View 1 (tube, rainbow, N blue to C red):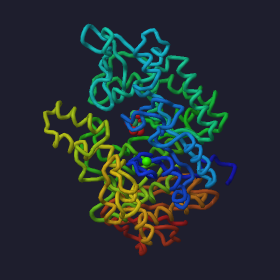
View 2 (cartoon, protein in one colour; view 1 turned 120 degrees about the horizontal axis):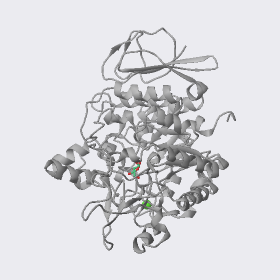
View 3 (cartoon, helix red, strand yellow; view 1 turned 90 degrees about the horizontal axis):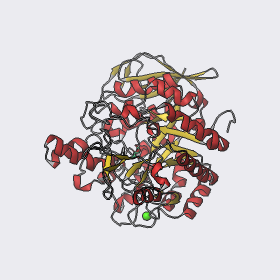
View 4 (cartoon, rainbow, N blue to C red; view 1 turned 90 degrees about the vertical axis):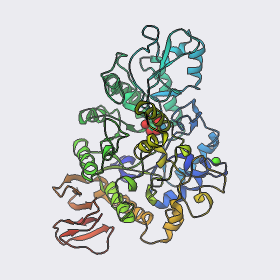
Length: 545
Ligand code: GLC
Ligand code: CA
């Protein structure tokens, strides 16, 4: 590998949601040994980095995004020995491991919080936000939780005392005004880097510092935001973690950053606080930005424009179409009904030809889709349940109607159903024990790894081809990026590296589109036959100029 480049500039990341990836001991829950068993699959696919959603000890109120011990593994997933083994086995295959770092909040079962709660004079009080209510009945301020309802929870055995939680009431916000807390975080980072992890995906990292606890301006979603999103001190804290710990290990840091603009994004890069970050503008291409549970008709330009503009502005992005919080891309941005395979492949070409680090989410490579039959009773997602109940009260809706709104927009369980490996019982996720979340029946229709391996022109084989192409190609990995004017449904850009030039053309709509091109060598495409003045539905082509 060329020393000129950092591993994250050369490699493709694959996100694993451990609960749903592979259940090796058939208890219904995915586990670390299951991941180890599938490393050869990931190697064959061409993956160079794995991002593991949280595997730490946790009561799983938000599936691990509520950590109760930063130094231990959740026994449901295995042991620390299993984890060390995972690092070792991954290394054998030249795959790096990235951990999820959830440091905006801890679980309510974390010993820090338990002690802070039981003993008001405990030093851990300062690790969180404990505040007196306003008057007799009102919380300290008007902030609301991202998962619906107020952001303050009243403590039972103290008079008029509350704690802050920007997510569920079991996820308690940490207080970054505390020097001791920051030192604890440094220790945690060191612990995992010493074990040999390559870096961290930092959960909701642009809201860890709260500048004030004043009331927020009125808005329909996340009241209080202006007091905690992208605050100056937030960058400083990350810079400090970089200087004191991360840089010494050459650690990689990618941030999850809701609600940033170009200026904030540039600051994260220029200060060296993060190597890269995820933007969320394109994720609102089919839902309302102010009230996300309101659907919006998907238009390809609302996916294409933000993605390309962020690259133009920032240069190097963490590119993704899916993760464990988003519905499946073929269902959102593709056309499952008429062009299932072609649209999934067009999306694959898009993701893997952009400038930046591509992030593939488990199951995306086989075109897993949303589970349209999901019922409220099937749902586990703490946010989907909370928001459904909130809408029922707020809008006086029946449970069915409220859930329908959520299910078609922000229900995160669509992405969390178990990985589909074959046509056997439970889609081959395990040997038959009922999984923690209902399986999506689409595995029976051939959306599974084993069947797709056998079909030459499957989505999986296309991903594999595209990934290997990129892995061995300096133009796609390192080339400059220049957008070309085109029809609004078409993503068109040039990648160029040391005199080699590619033209990427992707029709992201289910219509034929007039588009004139010169007759050049085709490097990769999801169609066999091409016309030089028409793009077929979801046609994607990479030309060598
Ligand atoms: C991030 C995670 C999400 C989690 C939330 C709170 O958005 O990706 O799954 O619920 O943070 O930790
Ligand atoms: Ca298991």
